Image (cartoon, rainbow, N blue to C red; front, side):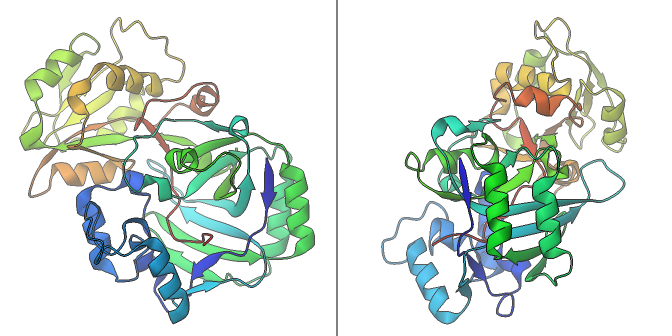
Length: 377
């Protein structure tokens, strides 16, 4: 594997409000969310994913390509291309799910050239249109903190080149184009094996050995901690009887109120999950009963048992979210949903993932990188 600085393309923060034009990973979006991004701003990066029309439209006149928008926005000064190759340091302060105090992550965007055997996937990803353009995010080893010391020295006395807010916190972006600093980072990380946190489909879609831009995260960085993925489905499409029948052989259930503190209940029993409904059918499902699965990573094993044996809560009508508050909001919405929510993952979950591939939509790493912060074109 080889790390290189690159001359990135970015939104000009003087021309656009970054929080309005950046977008979550396509893998985390449902149709409603995609439509909202189109409506939010005519310059939103979602148009670099799907074109002028919304996802699924296929009009050759209206659905202009990504290349069209990149060229048009560069001419208009909405996008700018940096003059010199650089590493792009992203400092993000956020509140992890279930935590009381905010933490700060320091990661950086770089151009990566790696063979297939130098990149491994931590969790499988469902393939669908648009996910091949998601930002790739990967773990690297920095046991002595050398890379972070280099990046800190280059940024601590500088004003950020851009600031923006996200759904979970605040971000600062620094452009590091010092040739010596970039060379030191490159030398430190040469020949490592990367572990993909996000963008597995985007990496898979690339030709063998083709360079790609990735957000690189140290293995002990706060955003490298795995988190569970919660699922929700419109109540009108949920087959409760079938779900309960399938669950019965693996979990013991007891009723609870929707208004109860689900988060506290899941902290107490970390190999459990909650089926949330707004009409009195909320249930707390306890530790697996004779499920035949060795518990290697606590709640991750529970998710595997659930997602590998319960096909009733899968398919196109099911959406995912890493945020418990979002799942609760969906359940209490005007068009109510049913949600399955999980506890925080055990401390040893990352080590387990480095040896196994988790099932699709069972685990994520928060905060997921936004699309459009910096890219190549």
